[in-house]
Length: 487
Image (cartoon, rainbow, N blue to C red; front, side, top):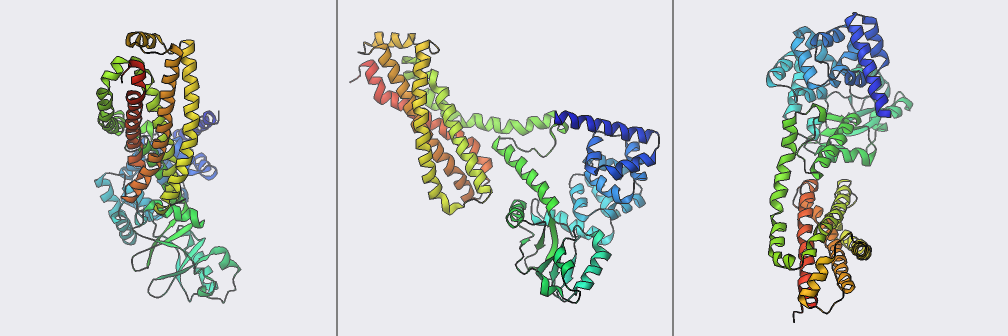
């Protein structure tokens, strides 16, 4: 219901905007931007590709809204605007944007558009943007901004507040001031509230936080996000290898990173390549390419399962009911291993433990697996007996096998043995699948691979192999002689 209301609100807002543009009602457009967040306006017209509509909006709204609104538009709309703007208009827009927002925009635009934007940028901003573009993707350097307030240690509180009033509107944040020495080495931070309540003649070195944390330009963005969570930060300094401050990262950037990393992990756990683009805006062929590779890879990996089934083909042909319970065993094992893998991958990503804790994790998971395996085995035994007794599973083939083999078994005894076979197999499968499911993420971490990438398909494949081998070996070595009088 809430989603339906949201869609209705967006449609009403879109109609209101388009009506105002059609009537050239600049006052209405201004009121919309003064009372409604930019992101909501951008989402309302996200499928609008009429450049005349977009241009009219940009030419009547105040500069204080235009830049933020531009940053919220789709790459296609941004390209339309840049192509339609004169150089003078483009420079005016760029002057209102932060360097990191420009960088994010340029990374999604064609090369010719990027070239034009960089030419239009003021020299200082162009240098900042070029530097950001040259950092490796998904690192702190690639997401940081260069618009921040830094001051020397010997600056007084009075002068610091005056500087914030003078330059604060051009900075990404004024809530954290970064303090450096004469060599640009970061020495501390000052929170705005500490600054306000300090005496005017105090110097920053007396009130700054010396136990600050910072990150290196080459640190992975996911590690940076963990630092924000761990230390409850709103802004974080980015330093180079000489510990000189070169930029900052703010909490709004981290929110985007968390969404991006979460989407990436979900995609990998589901064996999809990339999910960065909105679903409805992704071309059909591109969606196909996202899914097909892993489907084909998993089909190839299933060759081992095929080999096992083929190797026991004679047993299945001789006692056909064995095939009936194969999907049950494979699914249960895969589900159990998948549960464990998901929990361990999550815990590793949240730094709840590290590689040194493998022994503790494995021992705990072994105990969990033994309990779960016992519950599943007992339930499976009772459930299969029920299925065979009420006819959900046809037992005519079992009766025929008993008669043909001359086995000294009654039907109920045969059903008990089959239910025990499946239950016993599930018990072994639960233990192996959960132990393997908890071990594989540690192995992936050890060899510097993303656990989300390899754990899903490999866990499923290995557990399928183990469960099938267990199932058929128990049958062949223990139960088969009872049915077919093999001595």
